[in-house]
Image (tube, rainbow, N blue to C red; front, top):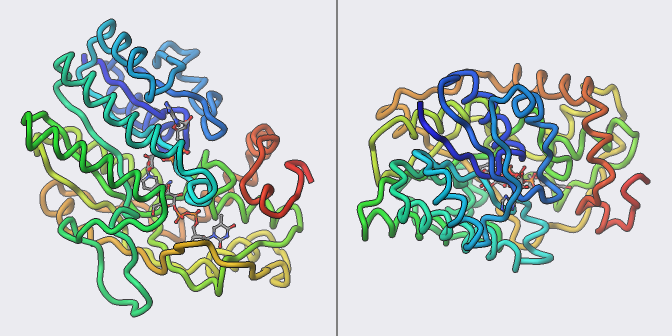
Length: 340
Ligand code: NAD
Ligand code: DAU
């Protein structure tokens, strides 16, 4: 039995991971530490909390005193850090909180982990730290690609990665880092492309496509990401970085068309709007290393995963309605009211 702390476990990927871990390792004692920001949603894991399979702790990873007290009291074996401010558009409007949570918060977790002899620390990072592959359609991010983050979100995640790396180089602390491409699946807050456009299309509202819509992202079903993280955490490959991605490159306009087709909505809903600042043109992951070292392969084909995801949002309207009242960044920009 291990005591495993999952930070950010009430968010999109964290809650999917908590469900996955709880099922795969029922003998572990699972803790979720989450600040429950606008993006955190306790109902995502409520069934597990109610069943006594997860202990939920509300708190802020950027609060060092609180983090140190928790770690001293609970003596975790493993820490997996999902907690972060994650939306690029928000980081352009208000970068400060990204520095607090993503950089200071990560360092607080590293500090408390080391003070309390945590035997395994894993940092959930992102392909955005590598920057932009540009317009040629060629090349992939490998683990050796230099870090060149563009928006403040990506810069804060890259800074956190460097702190994690420093704990291995300096103290030989048992850390790993994974850098995944764009995830899709259940429980994603509807300010991110897939659930945001799904919600708008469902309501017959315009889909605001940034720029020319030809920016490319490399899409992976969220449970495949969770499986990859598990393999990395189980490994003893301390100090290593693993890229995670499934070779599923799609332009934003392709995603918009898929949603409209699924919902039987008219393509005239596509509306080109002003481009995002520092908008990276293309992300694409080379996952060779994690395949070779740990045998990871994506299990869900994009065509199946995206259909399951659309079905989930269609069938879980109550979940969407519950969080719809929180102000979305897109709504702030367009001046629409949350329920408008
Ligand atoms: P999310 O925004 O859905 O969830 C983040 C969670 O962290 C929320 O539950 C929130 O309440 C919590 N949180 C935020 N600030 C906190 C703080 N100061 N203290 C404690 N908890 C706090 O994010 P997500 O999309 O699930 O991403 C999870 C992780 O995966 C992030 O580190 C992100 O950088 C990384 N990532 C995301 C993607 C993606 O496509 N979504 C891809 C690669 C990597
Ligand atoms: O690559 C991994 C990253 O993927 C994660 O680290 C981030 O946490 C996650 O938010 C995501 O970042 P993106 O910026 O790629 O995701 P987002 O859903 O915000 O946007 C996806 C693409 O869609 C991007 O090119 C911008 C575009 N877009 C987005 C929104 C919200 C639009 O055209 N219109 C929109 O309204």
